[in-house]
Length: 343
Ligand code: GLV
Ligand code: MG
Image (cartoon, rainbow, N blue to C red; front, side, top):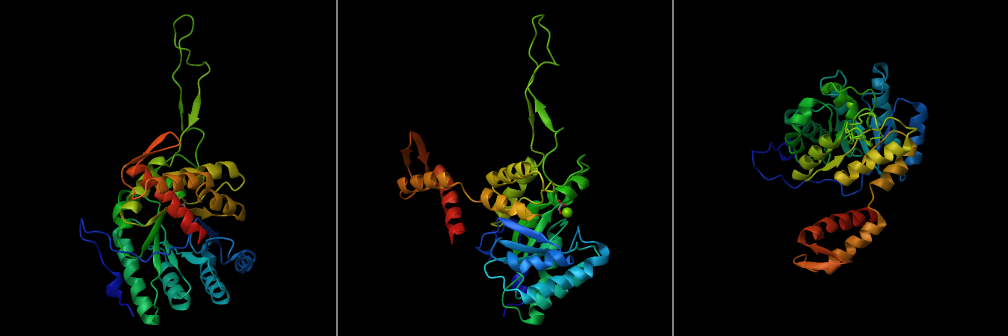
């Protein structure tokens, strides 16, 4: 059996990231449920196999008076459910909350054999991950778990954002990082009032053109483009995750009725390098599974390029376009993802 020491390996500056045991199974849709809500909890066994990850949420959106009920509800569900190919995750309460210690102790000792990943909210720096890493190692040793519980951090404070590279590489247990746009917006003092997605006021407008009198017609017909509020954050998050060989995820899209805006936000994240997202309602699951799977026409093109490139070096012409080592690598990413999702 592994000891705590095997899992606690703070990285020296410049040291290469160690190999990680991250689940190869896809996690395009991480579906949130509240285990303290009996109606929602009753549906969970029936959702096994329909979604990549079922996540019992213990943090925000669960009322303070229901925290214990949610924790015990999750234990009950886990003990009585065969999750088959679906992963079981839990979002624990924040490290500085009165509930975190009981959350992690109860879940690992009671259902650690079924729990794939613990999601840690409001992570501020590598020290938070080191603490969780060590605690997990102790609890695993105590109950004799053979398989390590992995850790997923939510990026939702300005300080966490400033430390994202260190967080991503803080432990071999790190599985991935999600964006928490609502908390992050509040912490950054952004002027948004929604959970994820854009804002109609965040836009660029085409330059004014001159009228017949040679004056700029600032009130004239000018194209307007709404901008992605999360582009910088997700791009930086993706780089940090790629650097340390872990997965990047978008997070919540709170407007359940706006399936079009939700799909656009998910797709932007996918194209920038994220592998999945949270789903807060069953209608977002199909969107996530579709958006975070490569387009079949792109997979076909990518196969074509990879095959034509042989050993991956040199240059070839495919459909009138020059392809070389670098485009072959991009195509390999698409092919690998298609293969991983078809397993
Ligand atoms: C999620 O937890 C968020 O804060 O957006
Ligand atoms: Mg949050």
